[in-house]
Length: 179
Image 1: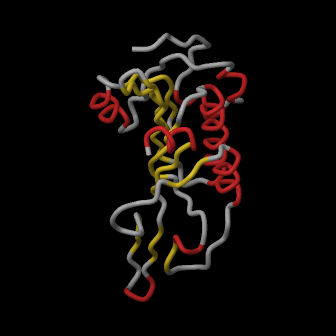
Image 2: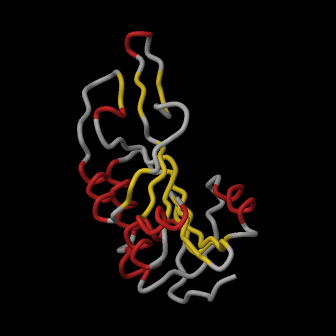
């Protein structure tokens, strides 16, 4: 489907714990999907149009063939831990810098970007690193169809917490070409 990319062989857990700039170098070669994740099912359904080029404990990245055009898709399940999520943002930035193609990154980010994306519970406390990461990578939200909130916890009717932690973001190149 596409030319093979070449650098060092990395596995899922290595990426999160290491300096991603050193591991990724200029590109990433195809790596095995960790057996402890549910990404195997996703990957098997997408294999005909995609080539998996990178995976970690919290994401899987593939190059998608759309006729003679190629774009990058990353599916994310971000850890609830703020520290681990921040490492993921660094990893995803390295993915973005590695593949100079239109990009979509989607999934459960376990983050909200503003107070409108949360109802109930304590007030919204900004984790500007997520918003900074979105801005640094020049991503735009693809918005949503359907339910405004993607996660909720029941603590009693007046104490329910609703948040939008799932989203799809894309580069402007992707939006112009495919959106």
